[in-house]
Image (cartoon, rainbow over all chains, first blue to last red):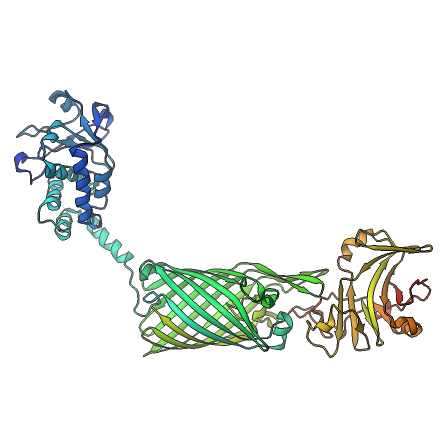
Length: 457
Length: 174
């Protein structure tokens, strides 16, 4: 059985004293009778529909629970009028009911989304404000929660709260809340509490943008220079990570890091990094962020490009972080894609292939006044590093590198000064960071000491 | 292969007496026909040079050899060509070293220089101590100065009818 309902506005709304009277809702058709109506494409009914939409938008009713679909319903419903000569008997066959008092029928719709609205001859006698109210009233029958949308009294009361001279967002909201089903109100509260983003006071999300300067002093050994051909002593990085899109809690950050490499003899351009970070989810004070970083040697000096360290790296990962009043914990899970670089030695071109890297980085620290003391430990598993050129080929197999490092930070307002380190704790065959070939990410040699000055905003 | 012993200036060449491809340089003298290919990879290892990228150890016109200075050489892509190389009683494979120094002191160089087959693979970053600098088990030579088969070392073939006095021919066919 088609349980569709239609509505007859025999008494458009309470504010229309001329046509005041009881409201009747009766069983109706399923819309198959539209051939009995002509579409309305212009005239007062169309014009007042536009004004009704403007009125609804002026109150931002889409933000009121239960009225979220009202504006699109009023705005998009197809408008029809009865054909001339349609008599009361025919109207009755179409499911039209009459007002006991006046017998006037103004419009009809069905209590489901996107149903058309059909206007009857009596509607032509309504003035502008009455027609606006009529549009809103019919829209409510299609957009209110199912359990109340067929209730003419509720639809009329809400219509009045919107169209009355003293209407406001709060008064409309109050009227709607009064009639919302209890289970829906409860559900709404629950949903709100689950989606509410509570950003800890010290979270990075409070001041996501950062401008910083960093210096890294590398701990080299003889093997590093032999393998890489570069005696890199230090590296200087200029960072600018900006979050121009979205609000703080939903900000999308894009960052750039440019570097200068210092060797024993000279300095030259190092890798350039482009990264993005976005908060994916916050739950129970935990932030889950996604990030991606591309470290490129496109602008690097040729000396670096044509060496073991010249490869580009692409890393994606997730950060799980929580900030409490006295401590923080952050876990990174990341994956670096395989890539390769070519170096010509003598007459022979050698191709270095760096396998994919899977990594876990655990950071934690405690806050004391303006200081933060902490550190990190990191577990990296790098797939095959392969050297191939001429008739030579060799590979290291899967490599494990376990790192650690202390972190001391002084932060006041939006400024911070950081001293931290990164050192290899254990690795397969004493493998160094050289064989990860990610200067911007891990550096070279056995590790590095780092200092940073950052401005957050 | 490694060339060792005695101070000498030399240039390494290999010679095929066999069917070759277009990259070979052909010449003939009397009844002897030569097809030559130049060694692509030549690397000097010196006990006093620890930097694998030291420019003195590669791409030089000449190298001075001694008891602690050896020359590693290889015909790159040899494995691709080996199926087309025929070695028998009539067709032999020689490694040829050339130097103007051979012209005046040929006899002493003929016995002082040995060509030996290497038993470990190496790359252009090889040094006196390592076959390559990367952290694998095959990175270090088992013996400093390179791993080679001493019993298979050969000296210059003095019977080869050399049209040029500045070259020594080492028969490496066997």
